[in-house]
Length: 636
Image (cartoon, rainbow, N blue to C red):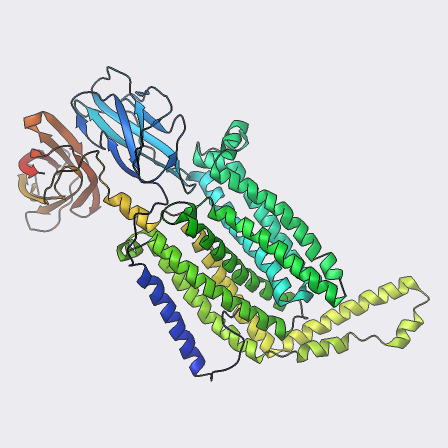
């Protein structure tokens, strides 16, 4: 429904121009404030370093492996596992030791003594402070790299079928909250007569049922969602107990308790309140329900704010109440929109005054959403690069675009609202009049009277529907509100995805962090050009290699192969190896992935120390034609 004030004032030409100007100003303000600087923020925790570093080759076996994170995390007994080349545990299997100091978050696990040379795999899994599971894996080598039977996990924590069901429940929870809170507010603020309308009662009750069921599913799946990823563990009592001891588990239990209070609120709203006829008593009850319902709705919204993104990072004490206001405004706008849609399609009695009151509520909700959304965007994104270069930022752009579409459609709804009259309702009231003579003739037969009453009710409902459908203003308003509701469904889905996506500010911080415990040596991009000849047909060509940034630590490696005619050339096999002969390090194998014809790439190639590295390139052009060429390059 319209997110602007009731129809009145400026001319039809100036109204769209003013709306467009307001929308442009809001969008500019949102993205402009994203450039404002701020201190470091954290939301999803991210691995910022390790010792040994990913891909490092160490001369002697370390006594422990340590991992550093961008924010506080929750760990368990198996949160950090170190596996030898055969897949056996190389760590002591004790709970990770907290080695944090000041703002540095670091955990470590002790290793067995006398570990043999070879490649070791470190697999880790934890829960970040904003309740989302995180995981990863990397390798390091003792002495020299070796083959390993350990396969790095392809599924991230929180993924798989359990993750899909959990995400569906998360979306359903938001949807149920919107219908429950928005529908109740619509009845109390915009259309008190809706308390007696069965479709409105069903809408609010279904919102309560959806939110309750989704919360129960999330509580049961929380253990496998953050751990094993197996549905069977949903009924593990020990796992459930461990969930209850966490912040997300406490928030879900609190939500269930508040939903019990919400059930009592619904019973009063559609029971005692709906039957109350004395206007003074009804007014007092309206105030009581508004206060009680507002407290319950705020409490339910707080269960999200206190356990997700708003609860961690910079200015958490401000971010949490802002997040509560944001959620309540979303519910009032989108839930009220759903209620209006149901009222327009299923109940012929709603009048123009109720529609205009919702227009004012929607306008206030959009103002609150704009203010709180700007703050949240600044807090979670913080820069243009994070806005355009991270998934969170791209989803945020999509959300703003959907809001713009929603406001554009709402403008048409506002126009229909201004034309809406209650003439159809008056005609419906006339249709409800009962001929006195017929009533008196059957008064002696209660059964016959009941039968006629049902027939008259059905006839009256049919007449009301016919009159309602014939009203062009209501038909136009129904169509535009239906379009708004369709956009709102997509908008709610995008909002749900944002809550489970690592914020752009944190993603950039993690990407900018060094993967090693010490600062990398300075360096520059390495560019090599190496001709080759495998001796077979079409066996001549040139290999071009780029290594960026060309320093110790993580590097991106690109390989291009050109044929003798200068055109891109594909080969059946391409392998590289890096050797630092002065330190007896290597060869470190690199197997790049094919990106396009004649172009291969490998990311996160680890250069453990600076030096004059020999780069061996093996090119195979047929089943029997192969050659290995090499060239030295100064790295770091």
